[in-house]
Amino acid sequence: MNGAGPDRSSWARKAGGWCLLTVGLAGCVLPVIPGIPLLLAGLLILARDYAWARSALRKAKRRIVSIRRRARSRRSNKTVVARSASASSQTTEP
Image 1 (cartoon, rainbow, N blue to C red):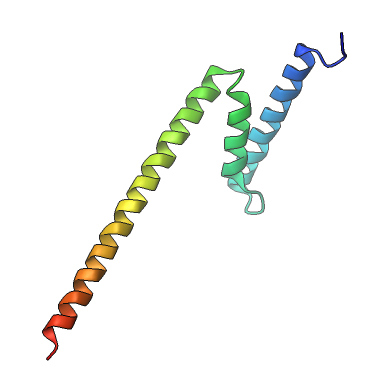
Image 2 (spheres, rainbow, N blue to C red):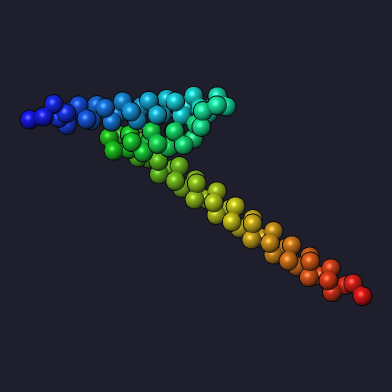
């Protein structure tokens, strides 16, 4: 049996996930550290072992998808408004 058994690798994975989560929380306060990507990475690692991390990761994914949808709809609305404004300005000039 090798020295890196399931208990040791599980412990290392959990420790790495907790470290990333802690540094991610610090990064939300400190401007030098990218907090949100580190938080998501920590949650991704911890989701294998903890139900609360899986739940938080699902909520984060839903939130990211909704923000992305809103941004796309706003972008498409601005494009439509800009196109209609430029079309109306071209037709009103002699």
